[in-house]
Image 1 (spheres, helix red, strand yellow):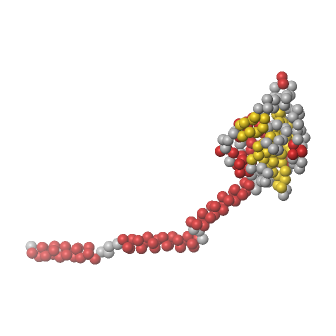
Image 2 (spheres, one colour; image 1 turned 135 degrees about the vertical axis):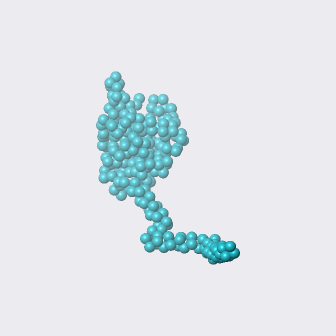
Image 3 (cartoon, rainbow, N blue to C red; image 1 turned 180 degrees about the vertical axis):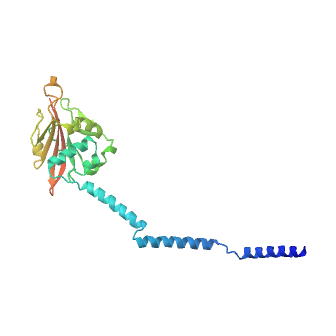
Length: 240
C-alpha cells in the first residue's frame, strides 16, 4: 500500500514539473509576432510592386482619365455636335453638354429670334454644369405681345423656351438657313458672324392654325482651334 502511495505522489510531482516548464506566450511576444506578420505582408506587397498607396494613385489616375476623356470628346462638324446637343437636351444631360459650351464666352439663351446681347441670359460652362441645383429666378427677356417680363427658373425656361418640343425628332433641319418665318427680326448672323447655325424645326402641329403654331430651336456654334463649341440656343415661334 505504501508503495502504491509513493508511486502516486511521484506521478503528481512529475506532472506539476512539466506544467511549470511549458512556455507562456507573453503580451510582448504577441506584439512582436504581429509586427513580424505586418512586416512580412509589406515585403510581399513590395515584391509584387503594389502598395495601398499605389492602388489609390492608380484609381485616382483612372478617374482623372475618365473625366478628361469625357471633356475631350470632339466632333468633326457642327452638324454632329448639334445632333449630340439635341440628344443631351432631350435627356437633360447638362453635365455632358457643359463640356461643349464655349469656354470663354459661355452660352446665351434667347427666347425669340432676336438676340439681345445686352439682356439675354448667359451661362458659363461651370454654371450650366450645376444648373440642376439652381432654383434661382432669372429675367430671360419679355413676352411677345404683352411685353411682360419672362421671369422663370431654368427648369421653367427649359420647358417653355428650350425644349418645348421634342427637337430630337424634328421634322426639318436647316443649316445656316431660317426655316421658321415670323415677324421678329432675326439678327443671329449679325451677333454671331463667324458661326454655323443648325435649326431644328416643326412646321406646325394643328391643321386649324395653318402653320402658325410652328416651333424652332437654333443651335449656334463656333470653332476654337478646330474644336466646335456651342455659343447660343435660340428659340423661335410665330410672334405678333
